[in-house]
Length: 202
Ligand code: GTP
Ligand code: MG
Image (cartoon, rainbow, N blue to C red; front, side, top):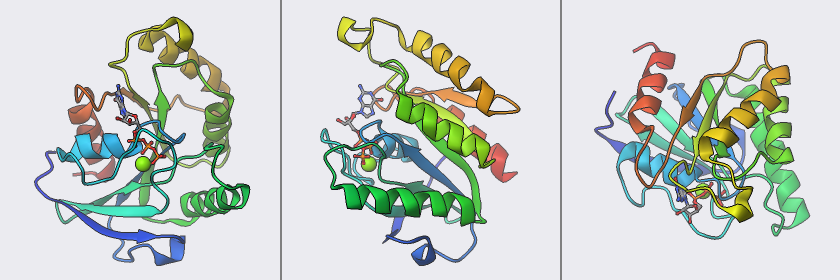
């Protein structure tokens, strides 16, 4: 399940512009700054294939990366970025939800949740929407390397993860698969690749 080739293919602003070769794909979604682009780089073992930033709002399009010439990882803009203009946020929200509902070759959405802080309402709302619309979803907890801090609620990543899972239980018939990760230590990288290969059936 290792990555031997990873290539940027294109940036799209509408689902209609996305690649049409029908290869299976996995999309990374989550709050701005949760670590989507960093996780993608960790998975493909490249430092700067997807661009990252300390400031939220870095990724602004649907970015397709082809892996091993046979499937895609898709980097998306984050939700909940308060400083982006309201109109831009509405636009983004509409096109990503539309993408989730209409993209036939989307095998699973990977919903990224920051494990270093307590659950945020906007993340619960997003999980609830995916559950109600029966969009196949995998939960990926990010930043599991971060130590607990008083200002972050004083809980360990494991505690935040368990708390989040309890809160979303009611939205799903079966609990979604979940993986704990860190782009700093590369925790979870092999588990994600194995999970993706199982979902693709090869
Ligand atoms: P947008 O594109 O703005 O939506 O953000 P994003 O979700 O792609 O986040 P990005 O990967 O750009 O990372 C945001 C910040 O979090 C950067 O400063 C990263 O270095 C940091 N970060 C990402 N993943 C981790 C992690 O696993 N551990 C720690 N400690 N920091 C991380
Ligand atoms: Mg990004």
